[in-house]
Structures are given as C-alpha cells and as structure tokens.
Image (tube, rainbow, N blue to C red; front, side, top):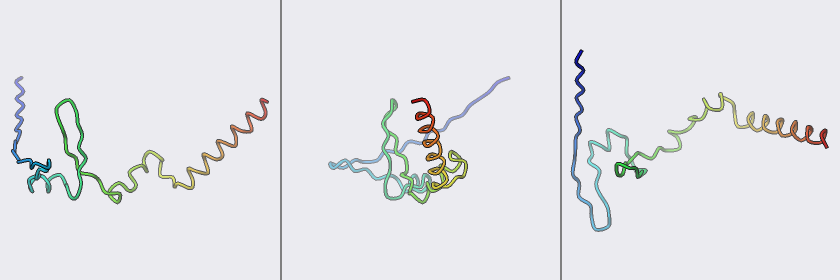
Length: 93
C-alpha cells in the first residue's frame, strides 16, 4: 500500500519598515480573523503570529473546566472546603 502525502506551503514576502512594521496580506488577515492585534510567539522554527482573541470571544471558555458552575458557586465551594480544613486543624491541635 502506497501512501502519498501532499503538502502545499504558500509563501508570501512582505516588506518591513525601518520601524519594524510589516503588513499582513489581506487574504491572511481575513482567513485567520486578525483584526487589531496579534500575539507574537517565538519558537524553535521562528516567529508565529496569532490573532489576539477578544474577551467576548473567550467568554465561557472555562465552563467545561469548571463544569458549568458560576463564580459564586465556585467561591462557596472553596469557602466550605477551607472551613472544613480549618475545623480539621483545630481538632488536631
């Protein structure tokens, strides 16, 4: 069985001004949702530009992690746990 993997890499060259500014081509800005700001990440391959998500895009992104609980519920649980730990320490003392 022969498996052929075809990878197409598009390369674009942009100019960098004396101030270090470069224009990201419109096609790429639209494709990756780049608006006002980007995150620049440096890694072993070079630099990577990533769109900076807006707070509204990130809203609710931790719901799965916190199992859909509200901030108030999480705080109440944490306080109960602390109270139980304090009682246990007092009992041991």
